[in-house]
Image 1 (cartoon, helix red, strand yellow):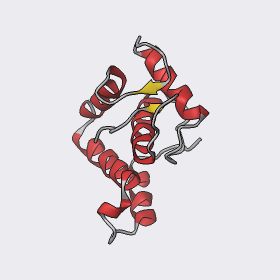
Image 2 (tube, helix red, strand yellow; image 1 turned 90 degrees about the horizontal axis):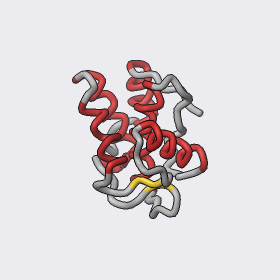
Image 3 (tube, helix red, strand yellow; image 1 turned 135 degrees about the horizontal axis):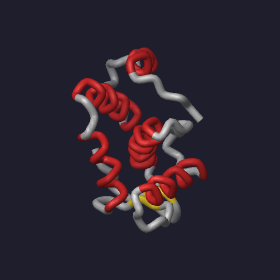
Length: 125
């Protein structure tokens, strides 16, 4: 699941792309034992700061923006590949639910999200 447009400073900031980036950034933030982002689809100051921190951490050009098929999104997506199978499955499920709930309208999203978070707890900012 990749972004279709730029996210962050001076980006297109399509809500589903921002949510995807926020979920991916939360994986990194969790590993860094830092406060997670609210996955709300808004590229606000906390999301842009997290993008810049991730770019700095990886010695990328720091511009606070993630472009499709560029280094930053590739690095964010690569961290998912490194996760264990079960953790990857639960994270992917959570990302799909926050990305587009129309793909599974028969599911009760709040209950399913609660199950996912009970297995993979997230600290919200």
